[in-house]
Length: 91
Image 1 (cartoon, rainbow, N blue to C red):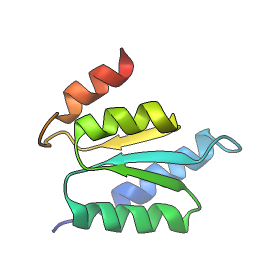
Image 2 (spheres, rainbow, N blue to C red; image 1 turned 120 degrees about the vertical axis):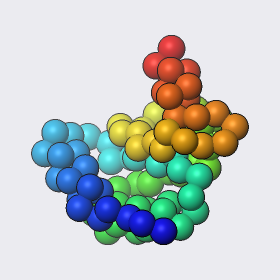
Image 3 (cartoon, rainbow, N blue to C red; image 1 turned 180 degrees about the horizontal axis):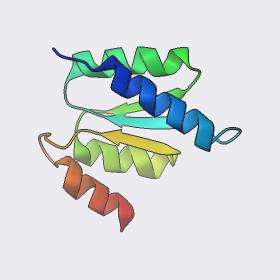
Image 4 (cartoon, one colour; image 1 turned 90 degrees about the horizontal axis):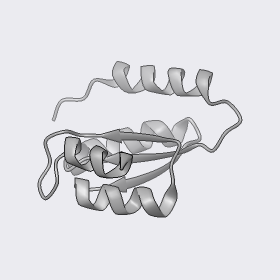
């Protein structure tokens, strides 16, 4: 497993500076369970409410249920890839 922690920390700093005071719910869509655990722990340390999904189809459904402020999604996933999932969320 490889994980670029500085990338996630950059997202946190950017998110905090842009959306201060708003809902702190993030939807994390990733099929690698190890990465989900790492990212979720980091985000929760920064007091985010992290919702997760294991593929694009689950991600679209979770988005409809939770209406997160931010979605972090992998592109290469089974069932429904990230590009198609984002298109469904956008439409």
